[in-house]
Length: 416
Image 1: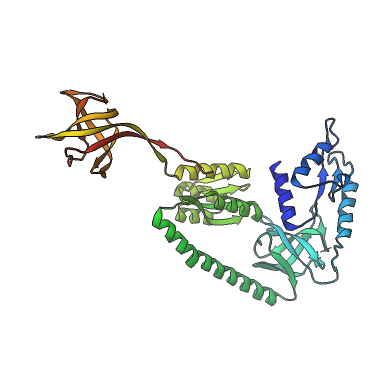
Image 2: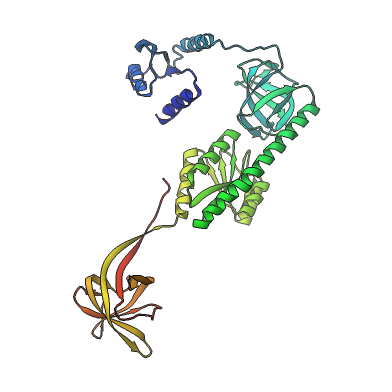
């Protein structure tokens, strides 16, 4: 599946060893060898075929060979000599973060070295706080977490960003100093990236064509989902249209989100979150659209459709015919009528015309308003016949002018 291929590519790019768990081997039609063979095309070669990749057959449903999978992981860790010192202050990385209605900001962290204890003062990116509680994956309270242990920590002042490094510091003063410095650096980087560089780029693009932007406000259940949505939306645009992320955050949709969306003229995209009653009422009064999603691909498909609708349609010309002006008649109350002979194809009433004089276009995308054959109004005149023409809003017609007659079809475009 595409996700498996992507995981293989990420592992290879990071230079990380791969252990393959082939699941659902309890099924009657299970064929683990097929998986082994398919992996060969991505240069993942099993040990049984002379490679260095451990392939473990398991059944999560029946808990078959889970011990074998754990043993394979431990053997790989031993081969790589992966060790950490538990007797020091804790350091690690933020895996995920969210705003919980009852518990406040919650960060899921993985301890990489040292031991994290309840009561420690922690700095994680631009967030800090005293650890009030440590919870494992079963929501059980822990007093400490050692290397390689993932835990949820409560007590931070805000939800940190996934991927941020966390560390234990010795005092609240040191924690505030670090977070203030990091927030200042982040603001300065944002000002630089949003200032001279992107402004020059924006002006260069505006010089050639107008860029249409779709502003959006994103609220998600966890920080990681919001970041993934924002990154996908930013990749979705092109030189003509693009999404602009006004704000992305974790937690339910609040009145301040609605006010922000109102001022930016943006819809609010809620992923696995809902708006409070006050926020819903305010959104209804202010005309702010709130869209709810539970599947990220549905959200991206919707936004792709909106951005595609913002693309200017392609103009496809279909050639109809040519005519040459033989004589020009100036009729009172009517204006100038061109007496023409159709030299190729047909000319058609209501079609678009391009008038060419001495190989120079003097009228682009005009309209053939009147078409007469003798004194009768007609819809079409074929090649070889003569006719009278009048063009909407154009009177500067002269003998010898050439008239190209064509239709224009608008074709809707979509983002690739």
